Image (tube, rainbow, N blue to C red; front, side, top):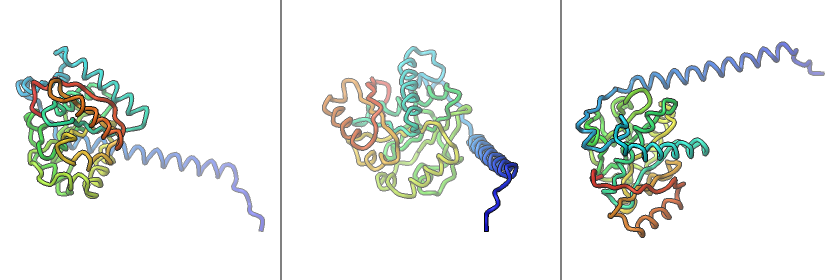
Length: 262
């Protein structure tokens, strides 16, 4: 039997229905993201603690904010050009100031009103972000990565477009947790729920443990933070080579770490 072609107006009706359905789904997704962000508890900053921690990109009165704003622009350009989202921030050894760089980069990104950013403290053996900010979430990062804590019990919101996941409880066997399928699933769900434009992971140092190696498959790229008068050229070269074999390296940041122990 010869098939009767669908009338033109029927075809157009189906196409219109598909577009409306797609628009409705997109609207619901956007609404869900807004609700998820609004449900994150807001936190206030203590000016004295921020001064002690050398977080200079919040009010940008200190000229030292300029290099971090330049880093922000470079990071954003690379992420957008490559359709990337996640950045691991690490260092050759401890005490290079990577947590300081991560925080200043996060607050610099917060000034970009069309960009939503997550900063997650995955330095599980030596968490520092919460202490530097003077805040403490109800849940631990370990509980969250094991599926035992809700997003709003871990992440705190600053303004409209920055959320920070802190940690107050060191994790003994952190590498096993970071490379677990459950942790990967939880972080994927977090990304779908909040739809951040940028995710910054404050990681341990490369040479101190295998945590960075365990977690690198979950990120798009990495930044290496070296410390003036502490990091050697060989350490920086070895770490850059090591990272480049496993992910994309956005570059190395030379940091004067006299103001932080992390």
